[in-house]
Image (cartoon, rainbow, N blue to C red; front, side, top):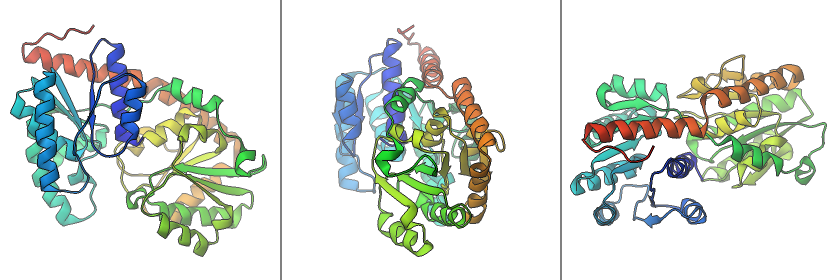
Amino acid sequence: MGGAQRYVASLAEGLRRRGFETEIAFGLGEELGEWSRAHNIPVHRAALDNPIRPHKDFLAYLQLVRLMKRGRYDVVHLNSTKAGIVGLAAARTVGIPVCVFTAHGLRSVLLPSSWRRAFWTWMESRYTRLADCVIEVSEHGLRAGLEKGVLSSDRSTAIHNGISLARIDEGLKAAKTRAELGLSPEHLVVGTVARLDPVKGMGYWLRAAAVVAASEPRARFVIVGDGPELDKLAPLAEELGVAPVTTWLGQQNAVLYYRLFDVFVLASLYEGLSIAILEAMAAGLPIVASRVGGNPELVSDGETGYLVPSQDGQAMGQAILRLLIDSEARRAMGRRARERVEAEFTEEQMVARVAALYADLLRAKGRAPQPG
């Protein structure tokens, strides 16, 4: 599952432990539905799709109206742009008491194209008003939304993503071995977990790999993830000369691979609050990441890893080399990374903050929340 899907799964399971009855509705993909059924959480399908498709979007709206009327929910919590637009409209049509929307990064803030940013500034400033509260997953996203006038200070807040340390630790115990990937104990492994999409900056990641490979013959590179950019990235790896030392694993359960890495690297052009970085930190890895979005809220430069300018493969490569060369600093940063997640970014902390927000909003509507 991607970051937003993992967030929904974490909330659904965590809220249920706190006494809430939870149900999940989703559109694309099968992973969230499979997870929900495996955890005995009622699941519903809607015609939500990624591109704007008016006929399908209207169908999704009608489906969600029917679902919400039947479910008589106290709280509806929408996630990501399309679900926010369609789902908030449906929730207000039905008269759901409390509507919460988690942005996972506002398009008006994140998109590189100026005309697209202008369109989404206009769009988001309107549909987010339908929510009783908008959650941004990073302080950076909240500040940017407030500055653009997309969010209002009285109806928005920042609640950082959190991850399950138990899930990470369980995955690390069952981790793949280097031998399974044809790696030796002497290799220094640089890894990433990323959707192969333009926003993840994987071209710059490969350029950083070329910088590292030119100075460190023991370096090997592992990419966990798949996506539309693969057909462009594989030839680029050949062109840069790093194809022979790069392993493409495709879509996998990422937790099984963190133990193979010496350094975790993310070259995103923009981020909300990266689940992959949090998981890598929880696995005890030092991080090299682009200084964008919420990344500086996770990675303390020089303490738990290094932050480098976005779209700068040379700077990223040099930062990786610093960690590969200094094993003592690498291990110390990894320990501090794990400690930081334990202190600030656990799933339990995230769920508790969201549950408290629900309770406040329900009380404001005169509906005392039942769960303790």
